[in-house]
Length: 51
Image 1 (tube, one colour):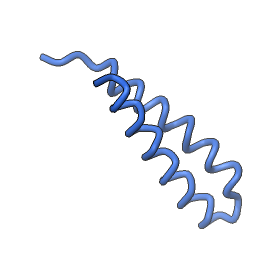
Image 2 (spheres, helix red, strand yellow):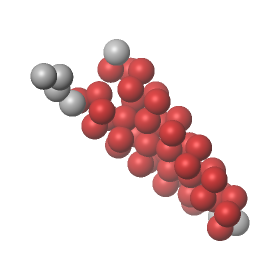
Image 3 (cartoon, helix red, strand yellow):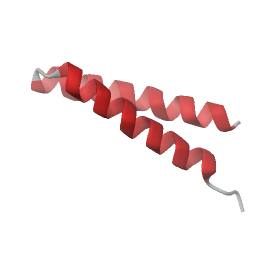
Image 4 (cartoon, rainbow, N blue to C red):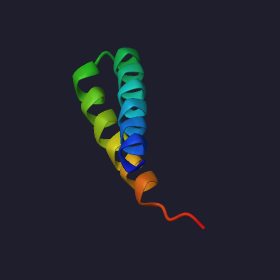
């Protein structure tokens, strides 16, 4: 279960980074930023405790 949330976060980061990169004509920078942000979001979601 933990890995699924991390993968979803990274995938979302890749998509967002690609879109912003295409818009700003700097896909290399924004793809890397998107992956980093997506990994952080996925890690946060996977560490969240359920009530």
